Length: 136
Image (cartoon, rainbow, N blue to C red; front, side):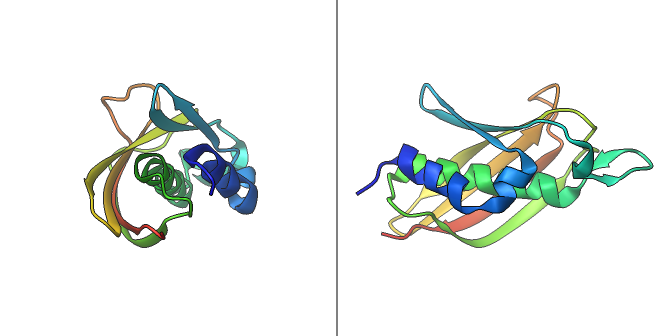
């Protein structure tokens, strides 16, 4: 049986998209966060420039999955049931951060909210609400 840190490491190793994004997972003092260093190939609209919405969504979804693993202690990666994204501000060409909160943890399903921000956590650029199936 593997622990949360090993399961999160497995997620990093088994998802090539994480390596492409350059997503960094942080687990300190029981809080799970992610950071995404800026890279020009993550821009969706070069005229603004703005980060691609799919990049922001993927970052928040992976952050939510990591939080589910951490809180539930599940030895398996959770399966996404559904996610809803609210884009609140333009993602600027700079580092982006995310964290997630479990709003309800059932026996099989976790309800999760995640936010992504850049320079100020009180000014999120996007929010995610999702449901994840915990495999036991």
